[in-house]
Image 1 (cartoon, rainbow, N blue to C red):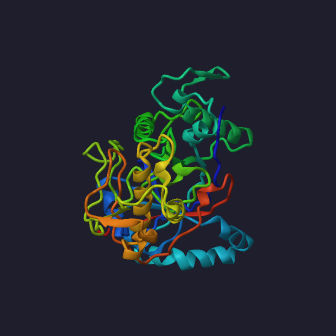
Image 2 (spheres, rainbow, N blue to C red):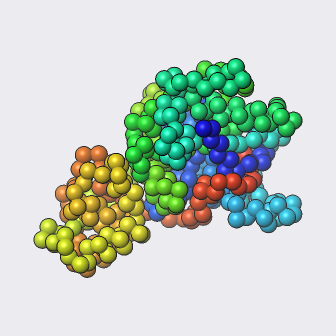
Image 3 (cartoon, rainbow, N blue to C red):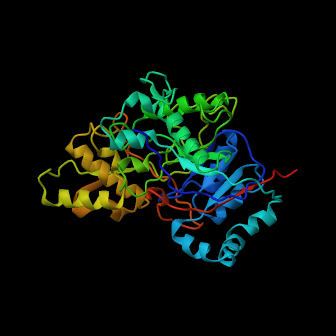
Length: 400
């Protein structure tokens, strides 16, 4: 089964194209790394292209004069007004973009607008239990699928060329294609794990590194990994895995070895100078009985307002016992609420400890220091199956 995820079509003003892999940098997290920390991490990892989901002022300012190409997305709920008149679109650009163009010495040149497509083999595997697992990866172990005399050994090439064929059939055979999102989550589902994510993302990087393209569209592929950093405030309507797409954890630590081909290190470089809250955790009191009538309600409350997506079947924390599950839920809420004393009460069920309760691969996090400012949270535009999003791409020139 072939699966194409057209989450949006983007209209670009393309400025000075940059080679190499790009990343999607989302902002749906209760505690975000300071933009300057993330930008330094991008530069140290040799990442020169970023796609944003909102025009956050502090983020755009941090990207100024870095030489990083930026795509800024406009959320779906604004499209109606922007599409109704060019004046509304001009106003949005003026309010959100012009300041950064003016103050960061950006020169603009028009280019042919590309077609953006998101390709997610993981989603096909998640939604179809009969999907051939090997066909999602790039190892060449899948049984080839013949399409008009061309053999396809992986879903990416097949999906990409399905789009190429469709564009050709409709008279747009030369339209540039951008892979706006591609990636693999590391938690929240039995097939969302570090091993599969590393295998997929490294396989993809190797697959496109030679610039050979696909059977119907030879040449370099312009792509953006989804995503840069985990976002624990994302909607889990599509699945618990939605909060675990990042190649970096919430605090900017690499999840696995990944060679993007953009730096001399051959692996991901972590964020530096990350500030954390105190090393303390909230856990269930040892003298509280599991049969206590307040336990179930407290866990439900904690998970409803924090993140318990690592507690599911065959996830990173699926091996915890009942008491450890409860402690994980309590700590998630406690950390998300900046370790406030009242955030560990739970009607007398919780207590603060300075002994790290992390068990194996199940990490009980200590939250990073909150970073205030910026545009705040935005709606999850990725959960739309089909949407239209207008983008503006601009290039921040490095100060000479």
